[in-house]
Image (cartoon, rainbow, N blue to C red; front, side, top):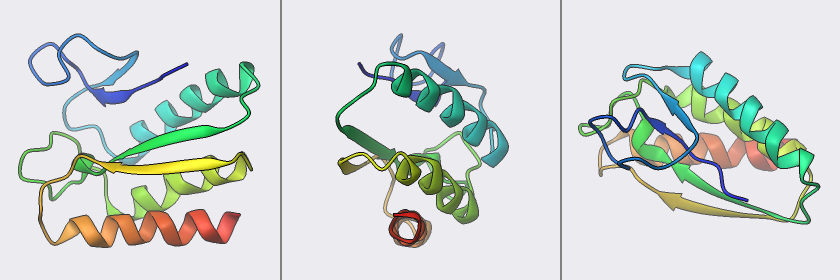
Length: 116
């Protein structure tokens, strides 16, 4: 099973892919709500493991991004993922090289480890 939370693909990549598109400008609250929906779908399939691609291009400071996810938002999304207590592979994908990139990744990883 694969789920994707990304910008509405009407005029933005990934074109015509995924199941949980969010409007341009979506921020922390919208991302956290979509993640809750996605994790509910994942749990319904009783997975043995999880692969999570961290879309760090959702950062509010990403020059090519269209979301407004803050560093705190990246910190917060780590909690529910980690709380699943599944063997998890985290893949960093997306994100332009900008000052927010390492900060957002570190915030996610810190909370992921703290919840574990």
